[in-house]
Image 1 (cartoon, rainbow, N blue to C red):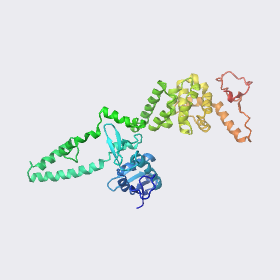
Image 2 (image 1 turned 180 degrees about the vertical axis):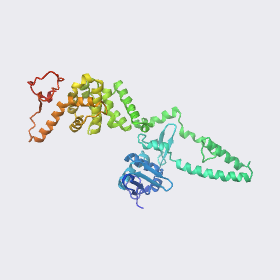
Image 3 (image 1 turned 135 degrees about the vertical axis):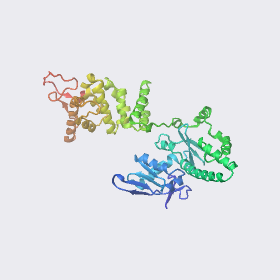
Image 4 (image 1 turned 120 degrees about the vertical axis):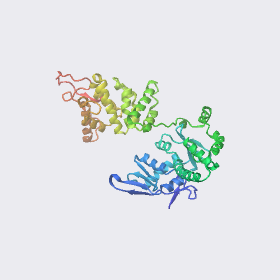
Length: 440
C-alpha cells in the first residue's frame, strides 16, 4: 500500500511519520450513493486518532452525513467524493487536530477537559500543551465521543465477562477470598463512576500526579499568560447545536451590544467572524437592518456601508436577505415615512455597491408574502418602479452604446412618478421637466 508523509509540508522521502494513502470507493446510486473510505482504520492508527474523527471531519467540511459501521470497520461519507479530494481534507484534519502547532510533530494526544468543555493538544516531542481550534464543528463531536471511549467500551465488555467468570468461581470457592473482595471493590468503583481499568490502590497512588492538572483560579490565570490572544478567546459552546432562530438571537444580541456601547464602527470583522461561527453569515443583513436602520435610513446606509459590504459584497443571497429586511422596515415599521422613499433607498444601496443590479431586478419581478403581506410587497415594488425602469433602460442603453459614455437616461414624469416627491393622485400635470437619476 502506497504511503505518504503525515505532514505534507515535509517532502523528505525518509520522513519517519508515514500513513497509507487514502483509498475511497463509491457505492450505490441515486439518493443512496455513498463513499466508503476503505483504509480509514489504518490511516487513523497512523495518526493515533479514532477513525471516527477524520470521517466526521469529512462530513463537517463537505456538509454530508457520515456513518460508522464499527463491526465491519466501514467508515462512510454520504455522496460521491473522489479520493484526491478526501486526501486534501485529511491534510486539513491533520493540521488542525494532529500536528503540534509548535514543532509540527504528529506525536500528540488529545485531552478532554469535560468540566471546561475544552480539548487540549499535548505534544510528546516538545512538551507543548494548548487548546485546539474550538470553533470547528468537529470539536463538539470529539467532546461527545472522547478518544478513549472505544477502548473503554472494549474494556467494559472484557470486564463484564471477567466479572461473570469470577463470580461463578466464587460460588464454588471461597466467597471471602482477597480476589473476590478486590473484584467487588472494582465493581463498586465502576458503579460510582471511577476508573474501570485500575484498582482502587492504583487510583489512590495516581492522586500524587494531580499537580499536572491544576485547575485552580491562580493556576488558570498563570497558564493564560502564556497563551496567545487568540487562544485566550477560544471557548466551546453548543451554539451550532441550537436552532437557526436561537443562533440568530445570539448574533442579534452580539451586534446590539456593540451598537449600544458605541463600538460598532470598528467591529465589522468581529461581527463577520461571529456570523461565520454561527453559520448564519448570509442571513445577518436582516439583523443589521433591524438594529441599525430607522426612518433616517438614507443617511445610515452610508454610515454603515463598510459593515454591509462585509456581508453583501459578491453574495447575492445576502443581498436578498438585505432586501427582505428593507421590506419589513418599509412595510411594517416606518410605512408612512419610508414608502415614498423606496426608490431613493434602492438607489443609495446600488450607488454604494451594496446591491447588484441583477439582484434588484429579480427582487422587483417577483413579489412574495414571506416577510410582509403580498399587497404591501406589491406596493413597495410599485413605488420602486422609477428606479427599476431606470436600471432596465440603462442596461439596454449600455448594450446599444458604441463606446459613448456621455449619454444619460432621465426619468420622464409622463411615464413614472417623480422620485423626489410621492405621487399626488389628483395631479395629472404632464408638463414637468425630465428628472436626472443622478440628481436624486
